[in-house]
Image (cartoon, rainbow, N blue to C red; front, side, top):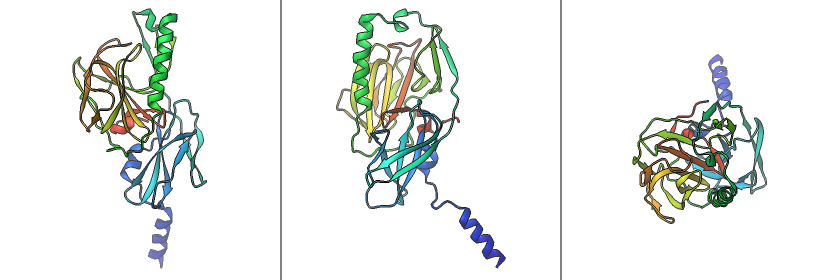
Length: 274
């Protein structure tokens, strides 16, 4: 009887399901992080929205559907909700995370305080890139444990509070890799090239849609090796490392976006630090 009581207590303390690999990898519910929300079993994935935007869903371990929600850096710690097309509202908790400061000296003053002509260009380029981030294709991502796009050490992490010549600007929206000029950049997962450009701040840039609002952006390239519409396999080369745009030296800046929220790419390569 005692053994049965102990077993019953253990069963009651276990979760209703075993957490799958993707949940363990990606569930980092902090501002700029990712929340994995259990949607339960079913023959098809329910449509999910967060802050009015569609959310990536996958069938984990063949057991249940999960929503993989990108959390904007601007979200405050506390309870958040997603909406399902079957009328349900599911909640998740966002914890806190402190991001450090970075102070950078830029010689080109136009890249700190642009003139009217450059501001017009920046506004036009921002709108173009915003439209790319907002795309939501039906394709399933080929993989969610990403490969590193370049073989190099991580330099500037995601979420840094950035000061250019002493003036605070937007937080660092991606992850930087230290790499030599000309180093090949590889797609961390299969995807379709949806935007290429040479932008004021980002320099030569490539956007790759991995599916269902999961989008990578690579910038400061020295060369772009793809065009819009190209299908890239996992590991396919899309360009080379450079220092174009607002960059103090050669490196790769890599953004990952989920449901139009820029999130920490380190989560997807198993390098997240709480």
